[in-house]
Image 1 (cartoon, rainbow, N blue to C red):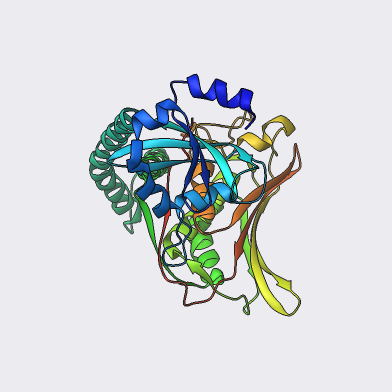
Image 2 (image 1 turned 135 degrees about the vertical axis):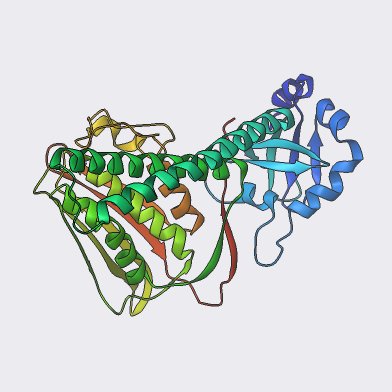
Length: 358
């Protein structure tokens, strides 16, 4: 920073420091000194080290690119929102200027709210599961002599209970993401199996709405490393979203293909494409945000939480992938997940955690 900028930063009440890539403090303002003093040396150096092949939190701030970088960091039992202000030249090593904001109380309040939501959702799942089981039992009885009007009412109740369970599950997953406890075991995953499982789980729902749901994928697709359960959930969320906006006699296709770097498989691309109502051009980039919903009215009635696609994005990014969308209003939509092909030795756990806001 320039001398003028240093003088301005010196007077700010927010802790600011110029830190090098080894965790050394090249410059700090009075607020940083008062907040951390000499205790900063150890945790800064720890953040600069790679452990088990994973980058330390400080290393993220030295990645190439000028885009905004920020993360929550636990320091001496408190939570700080650390943001990169700028890269700095003229010191002994690569350096960045960092801004430290104490968000301990804010995060504690968010955690309490998340825990409360998770408890309420958990308490709702039990009785609703009982209702679903009862409806399914009654409707499955052979020789059922109920009047067709009552059968239709029971089927409608079953559909609504399924929709309610979907909303409850979304809220539960969201509370886990917000609290950083959305942890997934990593294992070799057959993408073909994931697609088959997801499509099969929604085949009856699609048939009931007279929508043709199909899947197509090659048998030679390589494995990815991740969570079978959560990747299946991501596909189910995408297909469920398509079902809301695809008219009767419409088509939803789920497919996968390999991307190669020469002869070596590099990534697997999964697509969920529908012949539905499409998304308005000014809404396309907002659909992955939490609580955001398309302005287009669902053909299946009832609203949602606005969390389904947000959860998809968190799951995919936790697997090192990316998800995008292409849509033409009135013609249809294609959701695309790109997952890297990884070695089967890459084991452990992966976590989808809250994307904190400043």
